[in-house]
Length: 371
Image (cartoon, rainbow, N blue to C red):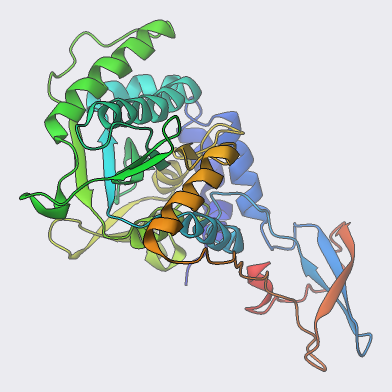
């Protein structure tokens, strides 16, 4: 399997030479971090076995959220936290997509643009839930920002996993969408969602002082589809939350100055391959590095962590109606580093040891890669 770090080491100079105007500071930092991840250039940590006293050094991981090696555990923990907040009822995955005419503006003002995209999408769903004949209350949603398509093109859009239910905190009522003749596959009209979202988003850009392009299409795209109880949708969203935009198993070849990668076409279901230069491949990956500190995952409404009063009322109402006890929260423990001599768990006794080039580094095992 071809590692992303090896591609960075080979084509970093070409990338910086061909894309100097596009290599932003946060992208350069990601480039350096992923290049050093678990390599001889990375700081090391000393681990000691609690049983036999065996010691060994292992390299630090970079911990960058775009690194395909790192934060597997954090991704799993995020999925577990979100699934613990699932409520009984039908869930919908609503996707708000921006037209291509706005992508240059999104690239130039990423922090403002992405924040407005997520907030306007939530404001649209909140308004529709308040005005719905059956709901008429405050909804909850989990939003995740994606900036890439399957072929790694720049394509900003936001997914919101939302239950077809609302909480009326004033009256202490929990309302769910009754099954209609249209079945469970209908929540809101997607054309009406797109119209309202367009108006809210344009108003947000104007308020922020951003210049709009001369020609904007009147019809925008919003997709709203049923996803059952919502668990599979959260797993899908969490899969790309911390592990970068491409997995290394999708990188097929790196030869003759070019990189070949693949993806699965969403319409045909077939695998598609593409070959680009090494510098272009790095640009395709690094253009999706978000501004430092930007939260690409946000909880809204009664699913917001700060809504303690609403969450307590929600648990009381929902589990009382469903006659099901609240399940205690369970979290997957972090994988341990095991001793090669006796198999016992090892403890980290020292961190951030400067790399030594006089001794060959210990190659980390599969258990080490989860740390």
